[in-house]
Image (tube, rainbow, N blue to C red):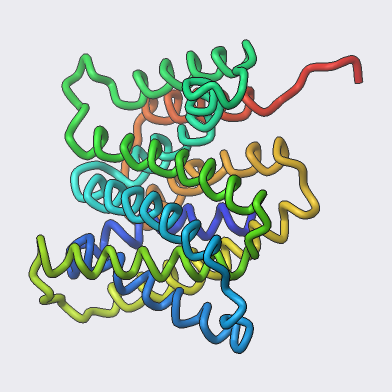
Length: 276
């Protein structure tokens, strides 16, 4: 899980740079197209066993993923990698809230405490009093919401007996399809074939999508949900570190304090205080 968060953390900087050479929908179609091709090789002949449930689940989950990455990519064009990562991490807290709103699960008091911490952290991080909230920050929150819905939808279809690898393949296929449609409807298919774009496509398509998600699925067979969520909160920390080291971003004291409070909120939502 730590390796997964490191991979995801470094992609925020890479994607922001790559978006200078390819528009968001084009980048997403190339990224998920590569992941789909690798998934085909991985599944090989077992692809014929894909079920109607897995295709339906792939459609629903793929739509959520498509929306999430579209919001994230467009948001990254207007905000910094660190801010994007911290705001995206709020999706962990949004999951139980959505379940509560639709009366699928009762939200514990500690979740509302976590929400309060996350809101305070985001306020410090974004510093609205200083006029630093921009459209990129708002779009990135849409990404967090989409990812939260994706977690719920994927859990539902997996609980119905869907194969992890086949529903993964189905998802990336639909994300590739939706992204390609977005290119022809809203963007120019022209791109600048640069080294940073090719590296970003490889890292996000192979490492961040195929390898990282497979690592995450395997790790969840060893770790419980609370441990997984706590480790996932490392992603924005790594993103901020990589953004500082490789992109020269200056997050500032308020940015680091706000980001740490957001992470604290995510962690507190998954910690149970008992007698042990």
